Amino acid sequence: MPLSRRDFTSRTVIAGAGVALTGTVGALATAPGALAADDTARHDENGHPREPGYGPLVSDPAGILALPAGFTYRVITHSGVTKLDSGESTPSNHDGTAAFEGARGVTLLVHNHELKGPRSGWAHPVPLTEGLVYDPAASGGCTVVEVRRGGEVAEWVGIAGTSTNCAGGATPWGTWLTCEESEDLAGKNGMTKDHGYVFEVDPHDRRANRDPQPVKAFGRYAHEAVVIDPRQGNAYLTEDASGPNGLLYRWTPPHGFRHGRGKLRTLAPDAGVLAAAKCFDSSGRFVDDLSRATRTGTVYGVDWVEVPARDGRTTSVRKQFGADAVTRARKLEGMWWADGGAYFVSSYARSESPGPAHDGQVWFYDPRRRTIRLMVLFGVNPDPSKEGAFDGPDNITVSPYGGLVIAEDGEGVQHLLGATESGRTYPLARNEMNTGTAENPEYSEFTGVCFAPDGRTLYANIQEPGIMLAITGPWRRAR
Image (cartoon, rainbow, N blue to C red):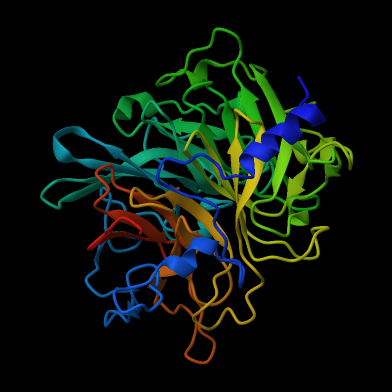
């Protein structure tokens, strides 16, 4: 049922007072001068303004990761250095990651390897482990990393033969959904099967991953991330694409379907309803692109428009809609389910978007109110090569200590950054691995940010060459 203007107006009045959160993210803002009002009341014992975060970053003698004083890191996997339990090298290009609680104090991490195209193009593709291969021509996939209580690490293949595994998402039943950011059909770029799907990977049961099957009901397009509503069972998915910009999707399960391990692979390709978001403002005016929002706290109502042909074989899904049918956004990236809804990212907007340029947005979708609210807005970074402003949010997670932790995928210097409930941002880590030259330094993006189940360790990846890091320190709840 479409959301009426009257319904939306009443809901935005409520939402305008602030999304009801459980100790995580309030009305966040990172644009210059856009801090929340209560920041002015946060002072130390000497009356000086209290800075958020954990203090300045301390340069790393090893040239890998700068952290605040008191924090340390440990390299968990390193492509070309560490080995899988089968003897092959850890694959490269680490991306989306989630952590799960295993037996006897073990932490299980499933993470993607964003490797596109034929295997010959990569020094360390995901090994073609027998029984776990979808397309033997493809180079991507997932590995599962087991971190034991004593510090020992083991790693094995969860799925192989997939392409451009970018982000994804954890399920309420303890599995990982890996997303292919690709639209390659069989015969294109050397592939022998169609790509652009979501696959389920079970970190607890290797046997459950045999004979991998795509979840075709979720559609075939440039998938980025996915979350599952644990109450209603709906899936929400982002698309990282341009020409035209990508879409935010919702998949509604068919009547009587019950989620659980391995259930998604049993769905028919046309099961449930796949729909794209169509937003409008409080005056009922259609919003063509999320770049139109220029202030944090902006609230849009959301309707859902069914996808005509979800497999997109002749026409990409996002191209099946007219200009006034759905709402688009550039680089719809990471997602995280918390506080009864879905946080999701648009990394930037430039000439391909109709609204003003920005260097990142974080939105919150409230399924009860059927609204989205702009929680974080990054102004255009005037000089990405210098410390200071941030740009290009990508993977995100909600911190058990309050606020968000965001992986930066922008220009120049790359950070993990925190965003407090009151709207202030601060650096948590800086990538110091220069893959360029002294005159023209280059730094890879951060990916896969997530906390261990006990909240004591923050895991994150440096995508290239492919390093998984475990960060520990004096975490404290944000004031």
